[in-house]
Image (cartoon, rainbow over all chains, first blue to last red; front, side, top):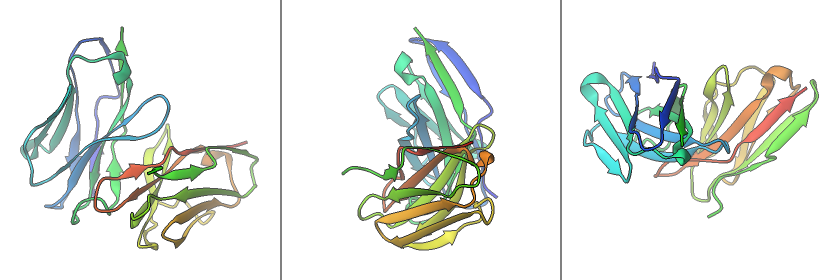
Length: 118
Length: 111
């Protein structure tokens, strides 16, 4: 069975601090996909990144970066120089192996509530 | 592209009433997913369709819940009869060969 664990439930930082959100996953599939979503106070789910199990390269997008390590089954997310607008709930998710990961079900973690104070 | 469209955005009903949630996926997407989000259980997959065919409905809580996808551009999630514990945000998502797109959700309150 697939499982996603986000051990941190709430994190509070001061603006401009760096913050890392942890994600640990379990799966028996050799092909799988990992995702991060952001849910701001308005409630919508905003896609941030998708990474397949064969690509362990770290990814950077502006202030966001992701560290994928198969050896520890982790897919951690770092926000550099956090801003108040980063305040949201962040979900890590895992999908079963398929051609793209897009057409199979996602298993979500419980989410991490990030509060960035001015 | 308007994205995934869900209606209504908010629904307040009384226990025992029938509730129908609607979803229009993104044109060209061949998979559709219904999720429920609650504080206690987080985001749970209820059911998903590939090419309008239900693939996995193991997440549907009980017989009071049913979902249909009569064509590629429309899906419904029905709860009959509704109960207070069904109060949640229900998300619809669709995907093709790219990433998963979520709708804005329907906030359901059952009194």
